[in-house]
Image 1: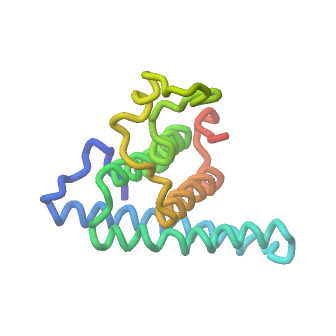
Image 2: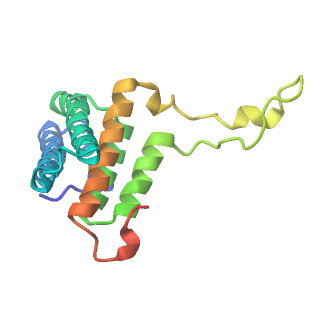
Length: 174
């Protein structure tokens, strides 16, 4: 079950192909979460502090993904978020984890110019300051639910690169 490239996402009007894409995405994340749970069960180190933390991270990731799965079921996810998730999963399936991480970073922090250094030190706002955030939509991490499922996607990526390592060592995320 290969996820299509982001350029091949079916349009909103075609309900059946989109529903299939959403099922594929849900299946991929469920498979990663099941593998993660099985790997933790195999290690059998729940009595250690690190084992408890790892198990807790997996359980919270599973819980935090539910709102995303509901959005997939209802087919109500924002197009920009869908494109980024498809890009992330597509790259992860090809074991290009650096590219998947780049997609995650673009989704979570965006491409907005970030001012460096101290801002607003004078009485008057500088003319270039208004150009920094023009055209950017509201910050995606503003919603608590969205932030949680995006962090869970990142955790799934981190596990996936351990479970299915890339052939090219340069594709490992740092």
